[in-house]
Amino acid sequence: MQCESSQDLKNLVDEARIYTKEGQVAQYIPALREADPDKLAVAVYYPNGNCYAAGDVKHKMTLQSISKVISLALALMDRGEGFVFDYVGKEPTGDPFNSVIKLETISPSKPLNPMINAGALAVTHMLMGSSVEERFTRLLDFVKELTDKPTITYNKEIAQSEFETAELNRALCYFLKQHGVINEDVEELMELYTKQCAIEVDSVDLARIGCVFAMNGVDPRTGKQIIPANIARICKTFMVTCGMYNASGEFAIDVGIPAKSGVSGGVMGAVPNRCGIGIYGAALDDKGNSVAGLKLLEMMSRKYALSMF
Figure 1: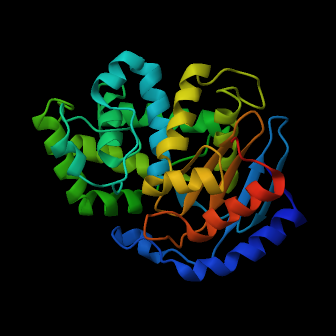
Figure 2: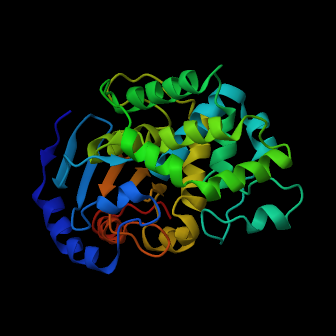
């Protein structure tokens, strides 16, 4: 859908754009190194279908870790709460998103939450289907439904680049397999996970997904319950406690909305019962969050009183 341009949002984007100089694009995935660090965009999607945007809104990004929220919702719909949380915990961690430390030091050795890489890999493992292709198609179709955009696809170059360089994630998979958290072929799970992370969207798509979560799983256009309300609630809670990696506590104080970031520079926000927010800004801080994107969200939260606290 088309978003209306907003002078208010444009002013905020212009003010936040200077912060892009304080970060750098993701370096550990070769295909992401090519991103333009100066781009910045925001879209806000409301339950009545109105959408407002500013900045480089047409620019596409891959979901990366934002996909963790979506795969969690689908896994909970597939398997149920009891099954999912038998294998993945509900606690935040102060460690980096790709850390193996807690897996080694807690008992039983299951990931602390679904927003860190180990937990996300365990959740993706739970998606139902008889093959990588079938499972990925189901996930992609779910994203298409959430965005109301049947043309959504994934970036093959970025998926391949991640697959070829994902040795730490492979190590996490082997650790999880040793401890019975996953039981499938590691290379097949890595193929599925890297394709999941490479699903391509723009800021408006992110804002619309955020709006579905904000409205307790209801499609803002059709009124259809896409995600059961309780599952949407669980996902939003994880976004608050774990969604911004090991900066989640600081973000809760400064911004105060459920949000999830990804290392492509995307941030998805879900302001409960109010709106969804999609942001793109590829320059990252040392935690893996969009520098200008976080600053933009902080400005928006203060200007529009978005904090839920």
